[in-house]
Image 1 (tube, rainbow, N blue to C red):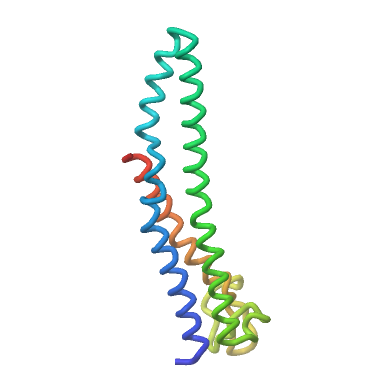
Image 2 (image 1 turned 90 degrees about the vertical axis):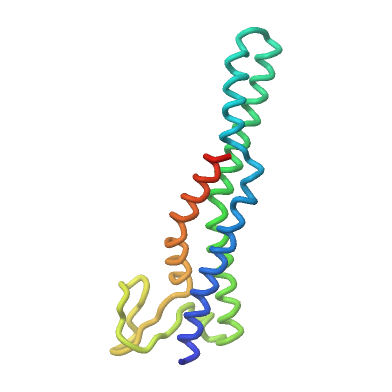
Length: 160
């Protein structure tokens, strides 16, 4: 197997392993935000807030803290996959810089053979050669894992 094909397999392995590792750590990260449990408590406090001004202030405070927890959980839900994507691209570029410095300058991996992917993924270089961008490889892995992230996070936030 040529060095370029090995590098492509290494890039795919990096993307899959990073995404899988972060996906497995998501329950630990989001376990601090007990949103489903907290929402029931906040709902009770808001219902009781009509009685006195003190209870209204307590309810306002609880709603404010609940909103901040929801915002933080949503921010983490958005940023984790994006940060993993950027880390995978960075690690892939670092490995390609160590293995073949010319690849970093080119930003793509030259592949021998017919182009089988559409033009953004593989760019024809000649009659029997293509180039595939490192970023596109990691982006495809990111797109494959995105629904998995969403389903896992949704399941975690509902069951807490």
